[in-house]
Amino acid sequence: MTTSEYDVIVIGAGPVGENVADRLVQGGLTAAIVERELVGGECSYWACMPTKALLRSAAALRAARQLPGAREAVTGELDVTAVLSRRDSFASNWKDDGQVSWLESAGIDLFRGQGRISGERTVEVTGADGTATTLTARHAVVVATGSSALVPDITGLRDARPWTSREAASAQHVPARLVIIGGGVVGTEMATAFTALGSSVTLLARDGVLPQAEPFVGERVIASLQAAGVSVRVGAEAAEVRRDADGTVRVTLAEGGQVEADEVLVAIGRTPNTRDIGLDTVGLEPGAWLTVDEALRVVGAGDWLYAAGDVNRRVLLTHQGKYQARNLGDAIVARAKGEPVDTGAWGRHAVTADERAVPQVVFTDPEVASVGLTVAAAEAAGLRTRVVDYDLGWVAGSSLHAEGYQGTARMVVDEDRRVIVGFTLVGPDVAELVHAATIAIVGEVPLDRLWHAVPSFPTVSEVWLRLLETYGR
Ligand SMILES: Cc1cc2nc3c(=O)[nH]c(=O)nc-3n(C[C@H](O)[C@H](O)[C@H](O)COP(=O)(O)OP(=O)(O)OC[C@H]3O[C@@H](n4cnc5c(N)ncnc54)[C@H](O)[C@@H]3O)c2cc1C
Ligand SMILES: NC(=O)c1ccc[n+]([C@@H]2O[C@H](COP(=O)([O-])OP(=O)(O)OC[C@H]3O[C@@H](n4cnc5c(N)ncnc54)[C@H](O)[C@@H]3O)[C@@H](O)[C@H]2O)c1
Image (cartoon, rainbow, N blue to C red):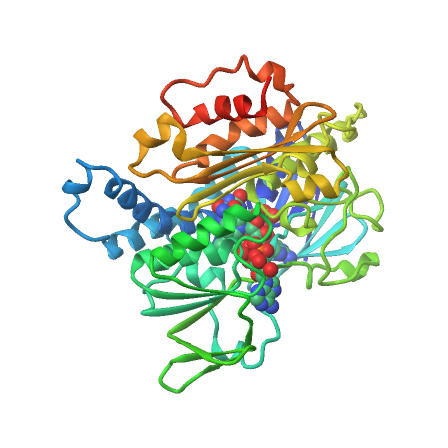
């Protein structure tokens, strides 16, 4: 067994772990990172990147088909082999050489293997060949071990060899029939992708489609999925799953009836990767999400253990995890150097945006882009709100962008402060519009000042002016 000492040890080299380590080294500390699979984590190989690659070509084709002139030039169908091959390259063919080189260039030491906390400021790494290395940290240990797909206890499901998001994102063939359990982000994105790739898709959305979003979002996505041929079963619950000897999967529904498919994808949320990371050695419960305070310190574990990214359950998104990583990395550096740390609201080391301004884009057809609070969330937070909706199809830029453009924008205003606290867009290509709303919310820009932020004509962004006009001056 060998022992090495670093200022900080990071467990998990996903996007969050990598960014924490980078900030630490840029701040002058030494950092070791421990990874048991591929450097780059879920996002690079089985989540964000490959799924968006699966979706993008079909989206471009749809966009061309919505425009006279371009439409006539599209004479063929989606080339599924080319899409899968492009997806493979976006997943770096499931090899992490590029990310390993980046770690080297950033001055971060990589230890491959399962990392387990084995006491205060100590992490033991067990390599694939059984070799053990003990790492000790002068200042802190950061857990950034992420999350995995949650597979529920539905009778027969595990024996039916279900797909999780991993198998969907890395699929090497397109099943003729796909049944998806869960109407959330993974369920709707994968229904969009696989129906475009040629699968006959059934979506079992027990709790509705994208139920966390503004209600008009689910309505529009359901309509569009149905128009694309997806069978959307709102309220349907899978009670039993069986795979026949010939490979056919049969999902029996709680309300009666059966859906037959070639593959079943489970997309009902995530579970934290904390089962085997030595939490018991520091008095914490293995398998639980790690609860953190405003400084991202793990509650109940002393002042040396931090958790960032999916594993702390604050926000399960790459960009928000990386935001936590940057601010946490800088805070650890500041503490190590005896410099002041500011975790007060919007402070340099705070993660205030996690509560007030989380942007998310769902790459369905149409796209959904939102930031901040929904009306329901704003009211639950006790805010006196005014809601302004605008039909994106009425904006000159939208009608130029696509024939028969359909979409909606909603602005939620805190009436007491006259600032925007929530913004939701649904419509073709709205993804790139949401950052303006993020800036307005984070900057707490008063509505009176927003009248001076003039959107270019004729762009879809002119919806900002229309929303202000509808709100009134
Ligand atoms: C299908 C899908 C699509 C998604 N699309 C998007 C998207 O478009 N945009 C977006 O913002 N988010 C998206 N997400 C969410 C995003 O993938 C996660 O929020 C992000 O990956 C979290 O990063 P992380 O670093 O916290 O964890 P992870 O990416 O899960 O990385 C954790 C790393 O830790 C390693 N690890 C775990 N335990 C140990 C251990 N004991 N020892 C050593 N190593 C360990 C793992 O192998 C892994 O490499 C998507 C998620 C899914 C499932
Ligand atoms: N574009 C993106 O930003 C993107 C894309 C994919 C995933 N993600 C992230 O990955 C995470 C996981 O996505 P997800 O879709 O698995 O989770 P999710 O929480 O978005 O959706 C899961 C859905 O399944 C439903 N559900 C829960 N238990 C169920 C059960 N037993 N039977 C049927 N339905 C059930 C829930 O009500 C929910 O609507 C999300 O938190 C999301 O932020 C992000």
